[in-house]
Image (cartoon, rainbow, N blue to C red; front, side, top):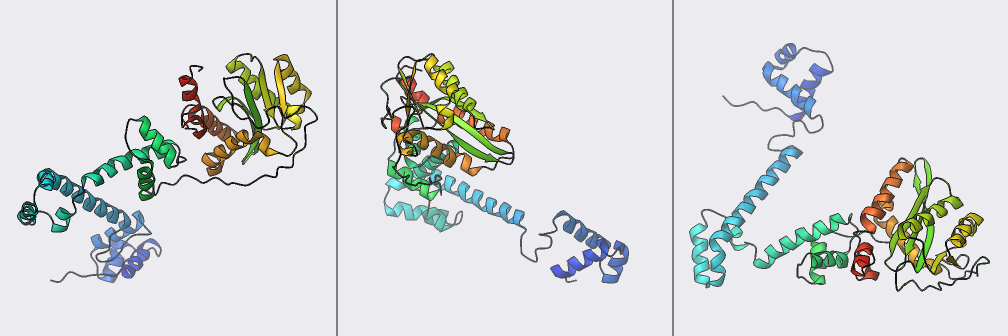
Amino acid sequence: MQRRKFSREFKLEAVKLVRERGVSVSQAARDLDLHENVLRKWVREQAADPGSAFPGHGVLKPEQQEIERLRRELARMKAERDILKKAGGLLRQGLDMRFEFIAKHRGIWPVSWICEAPSKRARSDKEFGARVRASFISSYRTYGARRVWHDLLAEGLSCGLHRIERLMRVHGLRARPRRRGLPKDDGLRSVIADNILDRQFTAEAPNQRWIADFTYIWTAEGWLYVAVVIDLFSRRMVGWSMSDTMTAQLVTDALMMAIWRRGKPDALLHHSDQGSQYTSEQFQRLMADNGVTCSMSRSGNVWDNAAMESFFSSMKTERIGRKTYRTRNHAKADVFDYIERFYNPTRRHSTLGYLSPMDFERQAHVA
């Protein structure tokens, strides 16, 4: 007896008869000349997966397609492994030996699989590709080829930069690009303090030159303001503070944290912009009490504090720009994670010879 076949449309209408029109399974089965168990099976399938139920004769559901793809991939990988085990020594033999191997095993594996067994270079690329991907993911998908390359060199692996660039292209690994813009260079001199730093964004030792500024992050609760202090010697974030208000207390707390963490400075230059928070009596008194020399950018001139602008650009590109924060606490936790668990201890900095700020200080024996 030939097996009966039913279209997807027929099955869906039969199920609707039971689920939406209130007809009993037994009555619907009699009306449609079906076995009750068949109709019950259709009802269960449609309830379990309304969108993909009854894909049609010879058509697999998405999850079944994925399982079948994985089965084929696993079979191919096992075959490649076995081919390499048996034919590894033949790569140094003549063509006659290779053809003999193919003829002998063509009944076990497809000839195309035998002829396409991965070369030593392909196997090496596969291993390096896994390391490249691990480095890229551990950087929160922010590293470009050069930083990934230095990660692999630090692990003791020998490879070239161009190879890393090629493997990143093959695996579709692309760092998030920065948004670059050229600010106008038309600032005026500060009436509070001169620009003593004069765009010299280097230092011979720790606690000689600090730069400071604050930025803002949008959350569903409103703005969160983040003030930071950076030591130009190692580009380490030595002080930070976060608040829902843009007051002098915000920047004062950031400087206070830096002093607590680094100790009372000796001959320290502190550079910031001319914002009212930094020109406030509260902040100026704190610097005077700790013997800190004040330096300020010209009004409206972001180039005078370019190193700080570079940090904010990195933070927003690598972390904040990808997120939507429901609360200020969520944003605070993410900024803390970026500064204390990624930027300071891990992130490779091109200015420091692709070392992280903390590694740079350890090598300089000043941590």
